[in-house]
Length: 299
Image (cartoon, rainbow, N blue to C red; front, side, top):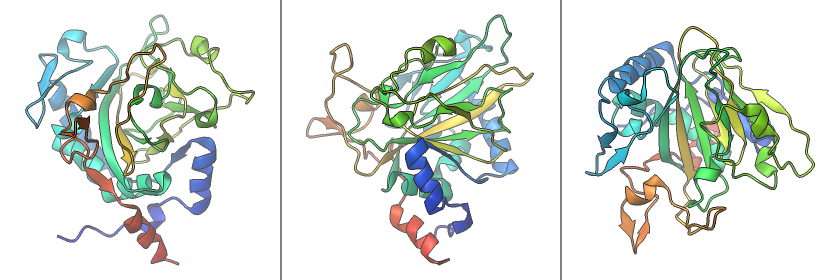
């Protein structure tokens, strides 16, 4: 079957790609419609309803221990990995060609899935806020060789500051230190005091997005989000992407221990090393040549 043609009007312009390189983040034009996102919400709820145990079974016969399951409590911040492997409606978001094409242009390479995170931020009270702390994805991905790893964040509804949209620290992917590991901390002000900017000014940009838009950010860009102050949960999925050139490397954490990622024990092994091109866990989702061809057809 011939894949659907890419709409070049949905791809980033040269100026937008240059701005992504400078700022470390980019917000797309609308890529998904209400039908796709309604289906994602419904499927997410059905998936959550199955999680009576912390351990889930994965397609290759392996298992994974979830960060959130029903025993954790319904009103908790949820971050559930590997959902696209188990929920077809979420896999459909990942596999939409335009998303992979944008990822390829920003990474300047073909892109594969690294892994995903289904996210749910409940309503917070002022006395018990649930934020996502300032962090970088690179801090958790030390085993990856590529500096151009990136994330496509797909919110399922409109996003503004009241609901706790994602916020980026402009240009922080170029700072001397990009290893922050504070996802589950709500102390945003305290974490900001720990930034090592190399003398750069701290400039924070909340991503104000209409339903269907997607934000992309470099793995070294510091990002986080404030509490959700609306009366509805904030639902989204983070689709983490790796350039085609990415591969496993041995790297130490700050404490000197050898870095590891959950993918290392799930993907197939080649010559004793995790294969980050494993087609089950890390399928290709976008090619640079197809993205560039789509642009060339309009010029």
